[in-house]
Image 1 (cartoon, rainbow, N blue to C red):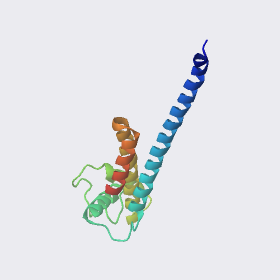
Image 2 (image 1 turned 30 degrees about the vertical axis):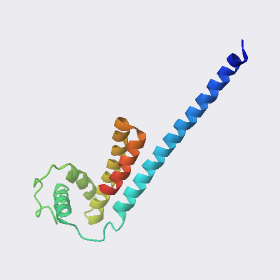
Image 3 (image 1 turned 90 degrees about the horizontal axis):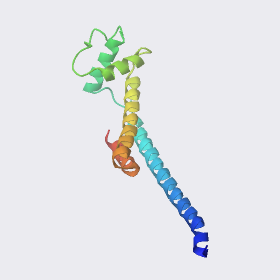
Image 4 (image 1 turned 180 degrees about the vertical axis):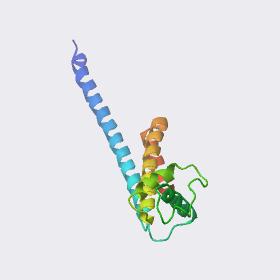
Length: 144
């Protein structure tokens, strides 16, 4: 057995270790990008979250959710089936069972926005690779 044949397993093992380390660095980088996207998304969604009153859509959705939650003050003002599909209003009504206020609706919307950022990361990662998914999540953090 030549010297090259004796060194070959050790060289292959070293090459595999370098590849594993490179893969680990890529995973770490994409997780860091995802974390950055979620932190940016959280900050932009929470910063001055309750500084202004409800706008038109927020008022309608909250009113519908309050009607679904049978809030005595708002149930007569907002018909339950007014316009849009009611998934968000039903989720919001669950929070309104503990009391109706502006901040509850906005916090639920913020959580849904953060889940959307994560889903963009996962879907982008499945279709185009982890790095592309991470970058799509960063863009989504600024948009949604």
